[in-house]
Image 1 (cartoon, rainbow, N blue to C red):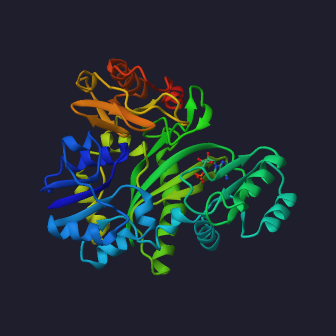
Image 2: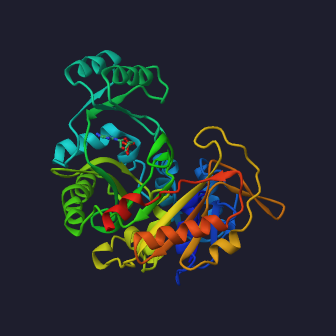
Length: 422
Ligand code: AMP
């Protein structure tokens, strides 16, 4: 079957890498893609906000299946429009994508069906939010409602910081002036993935990422500087608990609300003293978590995605390599602030010829034949290893083979997994 993948980041390159190995694949397109994806798929320029144009292209290129990488097109209803046009699509409807698009929507479902999460209040007025803060001193967490590209959350350690975060939201900096204020949860964070077909769900592995830009988890937050899978903190018992108490009731609730969830459901969890609690849902694969998940997946990703769309996940089990996968993000100097674009990157062939290594592109471009940096997060240097240590050693050996003086990376990705492994 002909497949169209939508997106251009490291996540999409990892998905493209897995899809390109599928025996079901006919011609493979990606819009807009990146130079790494361009080695395995035909890149097309499409305005994904123009749903009619996407549908026209699908008809013209006889696309039987569309895979949507990022959240924005899902929240904008691209999956609904493709489905209406008779085109099969992996990714939830606009209604179900509210799980990521609206923190209040998710919190209300959690409260209604008893999903473990932080206690919260939901506010549409500055005064009410500030009054709530008087009753709930710091530490406390303030979240803008709506997609804020991960920037709408303040973990306030002082009352002043909490009040300031509320003021910023009600100045309208994140669009709609609405916020959720929730209790601060203490514990270790982990990402937990499930594949859902509207009624059934199957577990799809675990990962942990490193959000801060600097070694020892210092400096500002980023989109993610590295990740590894599995997350050692997620024992089989904890996975089963998170699945039974968080994922399954969510899928049931959405189905009962008439908005069955189809796609990958990515739960950001806090593993607290009293078990896993939901911090947030994402309605798509994580970036850079997908880079490590795809390296460990033994089964055909297209078969799994199609089963999600066809409602046949009850007949599917997913097999994984026991190895650890670890990815190191190489970013342009200055990230997450302003970066200089256009610097040349060399040595990728040597780096990826090393055992167990794959390199997924994110912000890269071609200038003639020369690969150059074109964004903040640029490359995902990913390796499999029998242990977290081996995966880390292999990934950094590959990083060191890359000749890109204008790039940088953290040197401690995986420290928590390595510490736990002994
Ligand atoms: P979110 O966008 O909801 O995932 O929040 C971004 C980050 O803020 C999370 O990855 C956590 O590190 C932190 N965070 C969010 N909610 C809480 C909470 N209730 N308690 C502690 N930390 C939180």
